[in-house]
Length: 214
Image 1 (cartoon, rainbow, N blue to C red):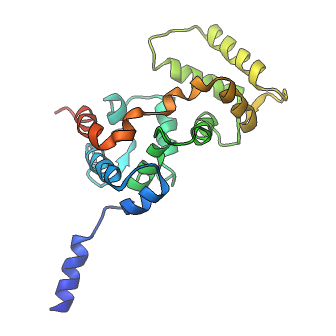
Image 2 (cartoon, rainbow, N blue to C red; image 1 turned 120 degrees about the vertical axis):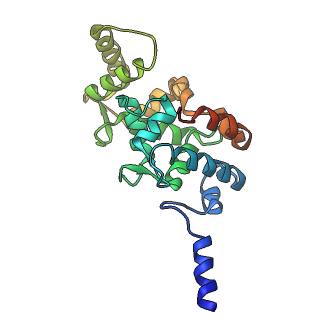
Image 3 (cartoon, helix red, strand yellow; image 1 turned 90 degrees about the vertical axis):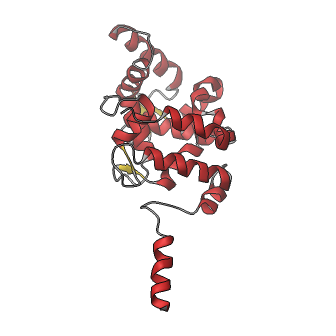
């Protein structure tokens, strides 16, 4: 009988892969336990929108962001890569919370700056090279209605390199990036999502917007 009770108890406390205790996550991020529980409800909805396995796959991530699970976009690819901290092709709950916390209004700017630097550092070399900057500028412009010629994009990249690459080695290191952000704090504007400060209130409408169309 005791073995049966233990077995039943184990089934009740079983969690999907990658689940982490909200109290542990709250101790490591700006989120409260209640906010993390609300985020878990959101995570469950997103992680079952296409494949019901308790993990967010790239197609589900794209569907939540762009309402399109098959679109090709370098910026979206990079954000997914940054969220997928274990580099196993899926986003687990702990990764979801820790990565979202970067966008929290109370997260220090140096953490946001570091995240953004890594976003642009496509090859993970610790530098942003000219071709990486051009690819990211093109991808970001692709998210707007602004259409620029190849020559105009090249001019933007060239001017940025001239201003930021202070040691003239043909690439941007993290110290140079920090100086750029210090002089132009608006660069980090999109690194803060105000609704994350009240995620328990923002959660219902956010999930509604993320629903899959039949």
